Length: 119
Image (cartoon, rainbow, N blue to C red; front, side):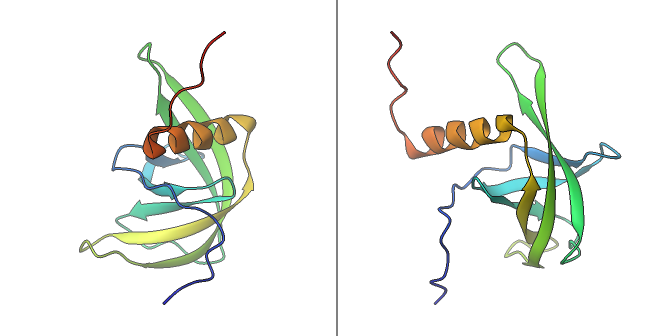
């Protein structure tokens, strides 16, 4: 049994797509996320040890999208339980403050925590 995980996971549905920030082409979906990394679910295996320029496009309430560009290194990749899909773990080398805000919003949403009271 794997017991070395020190980063709490937050599972995501197949909703938040991940793009290559250089080509803007989709490469997969967020599987889970933490302050220091993410898991990507894709139809192609990722090269372990390679650096990737990643982009998240977050839908906003007004119909627009917030773009968050990240730089990450692929630490591992293996076939998913779903045929023809792969899971890849990324350590983030660079992320803007908006990524931390996204992680906190997702933690709150998926943990069913109450929203902070407004003053």
